[in-house]
Image 1 (tube, rainbow, N blue to C red):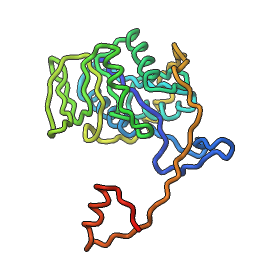
Image 2: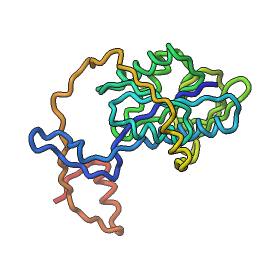
Image 3: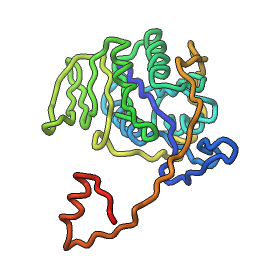
Image 4: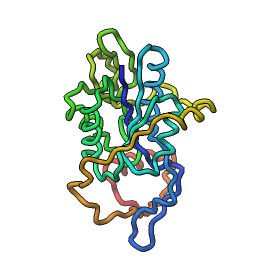
Length: 246
């Protein structure tokens, strides 16, 4: 069984947000980057499956620039067998999805896992686009994953609660907690990761169908109004009608 875990590299939510003085763009040099938390859940579950079932291979894939490689190595330290970095600076979810599809079409996988969404843009689109492009079964958000003789069993969150579904492979899943416990790399894993293979390919299509011409951080003035707990009716009215306070 071959599992591909697709990861995103996103800003740490504890990073300080600042703007470039010249053009008002987000100043990325001040940010600390991490592997997307939902992707961490997906990778942790893939490693658990590998540790509990024989003949399971786990690969990690990221579409991005060379600066992401230390974080990819961390995924290898957690237990992935090898990694793929598709070199480029994608500007849209469809670009990333197309690169994943192109790689999978040339390198077969039974199961593709990724987070239900990245925590920077929160689009939650890529797993659906990948499933559509490959014609794989697709579920998200997945909170539980078990491998069965005839395929997989997943528990997904729905508008009415939770649903348990069985389906055949291949499949693409968008994962969230509590599908697995986050893992911390061991010293042995860190040392081993240095010798594991990290394959680098160029993006097949490095051109986006749109270009960002302006980017800014919105400045929002707080109303600085205190509503006492004895007068919650006023708060309810404000939320319903968005009334102006005098």
